[in-house]
Image (cartoon, rainbow, N blue to C red; front, side, top):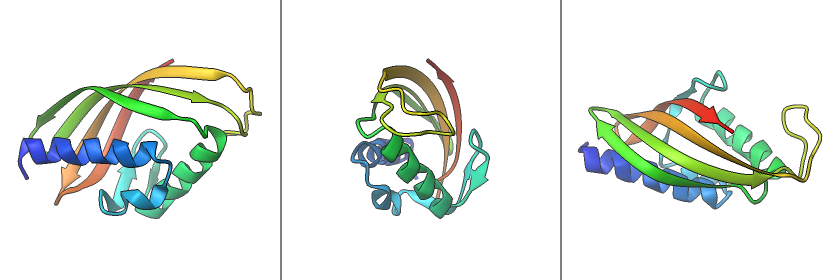
Length: 122
């Protein structure tokens, strides 16, 4: 896949994530997906994570600010916002709006996201 095709996969991925429908990522994420920051593996586990996240942060939205591709990797800088309306990782809902910036590296294999690493600031 070309670098531009790999970047397009990541753009489509975030369009899907922002629609809050985990089933939209089926064509973009590999079955054996490895999520390094949350330490789990598998597309279904990732979709379960997204369902919990969307319940806790129903207005979440992430915007890609920069995108760079090299080889099988795509790196992005993004900004996100969300309001915690439900329990998340044992934390009671706060009703507060949060913002963050993250730097994420994706590895693309056969046109699908195979791995992800994230560095995030709040």
